[in-house]
Length: 237
Image 1 (cartoon, rainbow, N blue to C red):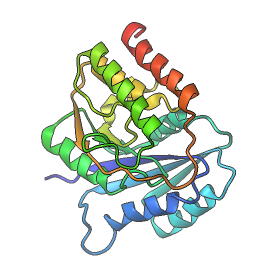
Image 2 (cartoon, helix red, strand yellow; image 1 turned 90 degrees about the vertical axis):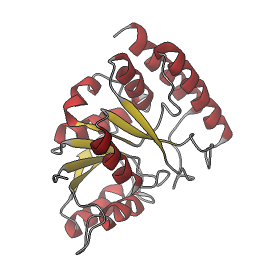
Image 3 (tube, helix red, strand yellow; image 1 turned 30 degrees about the vertical axis):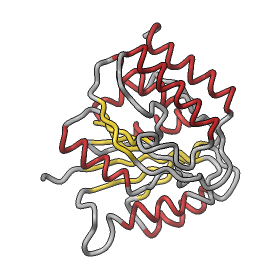
Image 4 (cartoon, rainbow, N blue to C red; image 1 turned 45 degrees about the vertical axis):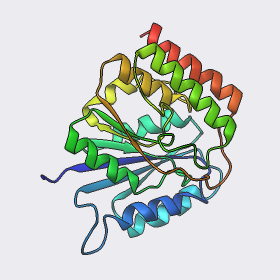
């Protein structure tokens, strides 16, 4: 297999407790004399207006690992905006992203990458729900079930986790996503727009654990935003 480059985007707002764990797991697969992941990577952490030590933790790791790059937003601009900042800076043929809180196994991003290269899908993402709800709180599991059913009805699909925050896609598709929302609703909107545009989507099961630190998801407020984002992709794009 030819050598390829994967750009991994990690949006981070006040994630000083989890970001070191995530970065350490990623670089352990590409560093050393016998790396587990044979392709080139760059890791772009977008510090989205953090008020804790997130930037400092990442900055120290940048000195040890040249593949890590830190981009700072002076003020918090939202999860989706942080991702899009990373997409614009990415130099790889493929772009992946995951959260900074340790809820997704960081090394699974390489599993998704291998699958997308092997099968030629446009987007591959990790499904937390293919093997049960794991450590996901019940109310969030219920919400994700609702958005899954809604999306599958609207777009005649058969997806299991439309809000997943761990994905890999072909860089050439990035322009499709720049007009998507700036907040946490970016992920369900990305699922919806991919289906609307007829992109090839594949899901793979991944473990899911309790996050490190406090969640930023506001169940009802963000839930309504998720709903609007999915409907907007169906009827207004």
